[in-house]
Image (spheres, helix red, strand yellow):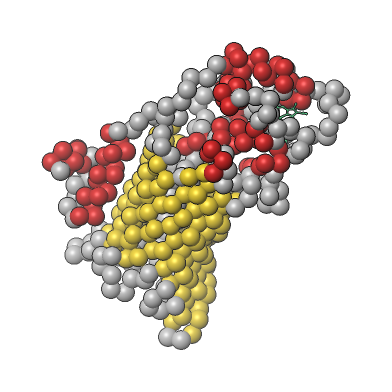
Length: 388
Ligand code: HEC
């Protein structure tokens, strides 16, 4: 424990993380992620061999440069999702497993056009890995974060990867006063590293046997990926945003003051598809007389499993440890534990759902247990109605 304590003192985190058993667990997780960030080991693929395969099997449709064969030479009408392998913004969000599924089983395996043939009988698994390595070489800008680092979204902990996503996330009280909150979240990438985020919460509460509903305080922010490496499996992002006082304060739906929010998110993927997502942040209201400053820290620990040798439906059980604390004298730290399961719904894996249960386990008085779930749509991967 000494070693962790010294390290955290260096990070200036000792004041935030009092030595409770739970923070010890969190410290161990964090240290594991930082200290043992392992290399994502892969067989080194033969790009030259991949190029040969591409030229014999793929070039007639995908073209000599990977942008697509001239329309005059191809028989088929291009689907709007037809790939241009030179466009890094299109290709880097796709993990190799998504491409491999399409190459092995053909387009329909991920809800794409049947024009894209299946090569699973013609090419070996290694040959397909080689051709994917060649396709990867067609994106010449290696500053884009790779889709492998786009880890399954946790219910509460925010991830580091910049996303093109719509999420509807609901939390329903299961004890105490009935109530629920639904966050409508829009995330959109811009440039190589950035993402806009808009989050509008809609709340319903039973207050002395009358139901009240309304919009809560909405968040507008920008997340920026600062560092990512597929080799080590790590990605780091910073977020800055404003929470506007759009909620009705007297109903308890808003704080009544503009709040600045900032956080850092660090995610680590291990070669076994185990992952850790860490987030540390603060809410800093303009008027601290009506709403206190708050710090929070969150960790999601999970493991992904996919059928069909890693190409099929993805199941990701996770557990989150979520804490926050008001920066006022005598405040106590609120800890929640959140076991959950994310699963891909559509064949393309661009529609996913997550269901979990948030249970307070410190400072429990007046704090609710909640069922929490979301449905997300990664809209860069195609329309809602496609990919089934
Ligand atoms: C007969 C034409 C044809 C041939 C041959 C062909 N493809 Fe395709 N491929 C397509 C079409 C069309 C699509 C787009 C499908 C869609 O978007 O619905 C596609 C899509 C893809 C995708 C994109 C999947 C995604 O996630 O966007 C990959 C990867 C791919 N092809 C790889 C290959 C490789 C590698 C070869 C050679 C081994 C190959 N293709 C041969 C027509 C072809």
